Image: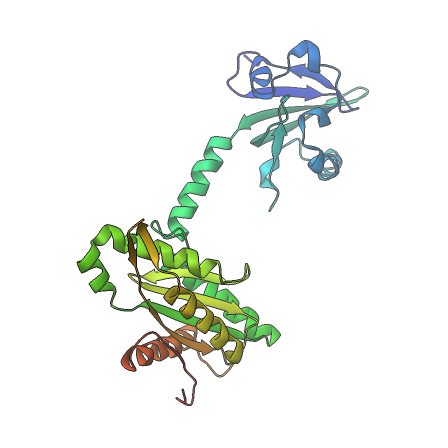
Length: 294
């Protein structure tokens, strides 16, 4: 039954030398039994995990527990190493079998790489906008709450920009919704090229975008906003050799203050500033403040 099991099953002696390797293990790792029996267990583990793996094995041997799922360890990914050098995500159950001269450790190993890929796809779908690939509204809210908590706790500046494409309906009506989608992607690419890696950028909905600027005060936030605005204005979308689409954006900005009672207050301040930028003629930056001075 062990030899024909659908999961890889291996065993090592007290010196961590492999003494059993079933057929499924041969398929998973790429080694034949003749090649691998007698080799150290680390042969099947990526080198960067050797030290932490040895530590957890020693701890397990000292415990009264006779079996456990290795993946129960928090924030620790378990990976296997194939003969060809490729790594894979693994789910491993280990069993301690006492012997007269020590012990045997047996492991049941399952390749969960496909499950990990599906998990990542589902997570990306839940957190990112399907058209532009940047954060969606739900993810923006989560990041905003965390950034606000960090800014408040460590007394660090934090600024927020709300961006909106001017006359976007006219773009759709003139060129079609396919080109409208290209404009949204174009704005995403141009904006990302002008932002830092630590900045958070997402699509709030429709033609509205949000930028979170950690450790950036209101003065520098205006500089960033102007850089984004002028970059969009001076970089039209090229549809083909003979046709370009020029468009502009309006931006409202705000800086976090400890006097704000919630993230919604912070967000509303930037949104009001954006509305003012629209009212004053578009293609400009307006900065909001708690005392309503712009």
